[in-house]
Length: 122
Length: 106
Image 1 (cartoon, one colour):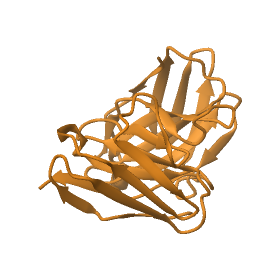
Image 2: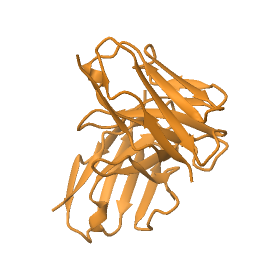
Image 3: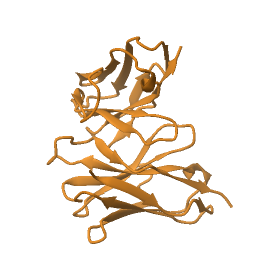
Image 4: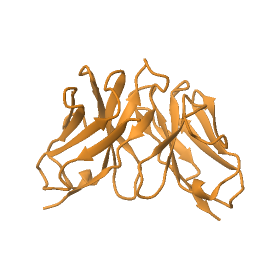
């Protein structure tokens, strides 16, 4: 069974870059989209974007100018960089696996990391 | 952007009651719709994909229906562990989540 684990700093200063990594174990990176999703404290879920193992990416239009997601198949991990953060970027960040059209559960997130809280503060 | 509107925002019910949650899309998403359950301090858990298919290991009391713009998640008889927040999510165009429905104990 696939497992995902986020890692990265819990505190980032305003205007700096937020970098997170998700390590995948127990499964292949092929035939899936690898996404980042965030949840501000007490609020709902917001999709940030995804990358496939072949490097196909897609981003939430509201964040597209500041975010980059990439996959490293040799390390079985994928990463996110969010530029020029503000306090509005404070949230729990989740990594998740989404089924591609080659899988049964296309478009649904069947595996999630436990989430990591990132606070933007000086 | 496709907007998903969930209603009601909060549903107050007793254990054993039937819960009916609604998700309405601003334009057709065909059946590219999923439902998730989230408990405090936990990641969301996939319940339903493709509008009506239960994910592996999900109890049969959970069912999904609908297509196009109107969708429903039904919990036939609420178990104490079902009190949580539920989100719908579409994948027809890019990807968006609804605002959530909290199912609380009455």
